[in-house]
Length: 190
Image (cartoon, rainbow, N blue to C red; front, top):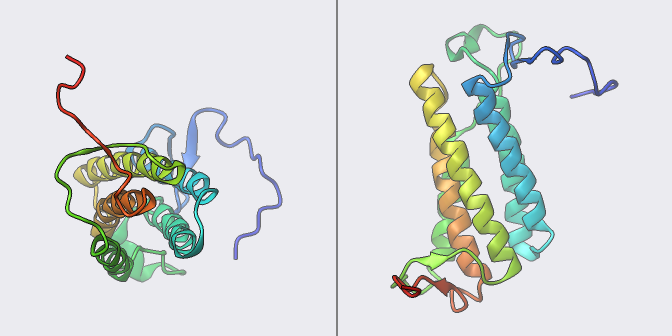
């Protein structure tokens, strides 16, 4: 259980922050950039939920929880010592990726195949989901950069990759099952 009695600690006033294992790093460290962007994504998902209803809202709620799991995973370095840790660190599980894939398949089966690229927009929920998609891609890029520097849970990168696909398909579903997608017209304004 997490207990936060005091919100400010002043420990970061000189530009450092603590990772999940207590190690202090600069706030622009690749690991902090990766999990900070996951946190930003979670905020955008919260905004999207203002427009969501029913199963879409429930799915977004699950995603928000997964994103906290992912942040906890990314903020904890040194996977090699997981087995010896007093409390096993929370790591994203492949089953969380599998769930996204199953949800994508269900949604995509209801959509006509794309014959053009689409522009972000349409319904308000679709527009918000496209923002989530692009922030998810940025979090993925930053996680790949982190993985080039140190070992991270491979499921973290895979999850972010699938999640951006999930947001794309969910945005299409939010545009009246893709019927109201805004299509790109190449060279339309030449």
